[in-house]
Length: 220
Image (cartoon, rainbow, N blue to C red; front, side):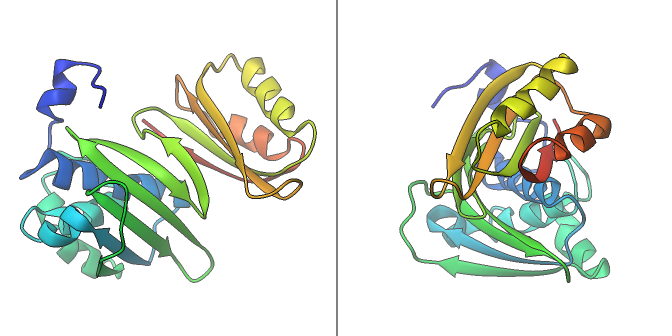
């Protein structure tokens, strides 16, 4: 496990009780909301191993709800997030899943509204740091600590080049990039972590690039 500074070891400014079970869970929930691109009206959350055993006592349930509501880790409303979700008609179901996973602090979130939904897997690796390891069936490695663009596209020649040309045009530096596909010539997913938040103007231009299907972003 790598930490960049003493503050990563201490943990973030947050509503407690746990950096891994509360702050990390909140960041997973917020990542799901950001990737969905709008406020969900329902969520089904599968919890595994340590998350499943202690989620009520350690505040993982209200932290995930707070993240889905867009709360930061230090938002004073965090501990009341489940009640606030009910007030906003956000229906949340928690499922204790006994399936084997690679990390004990794992959550699978399926969130959506009447028109669309997404599914992602997030893990809390300690100190409030998280990784998103799966999105809609695609494996990925996304820290959630940097702005990122996720681009669903057809696996065709020129798709990646058309995206990187636009980012270079706006002088947006790529910190990390990976591409995953389920099969040759089918849908693929670009995950691009960048050094700054990307304006909607850039996103609209990216949406018109070659072979692009859908775009989502994470902000820092």
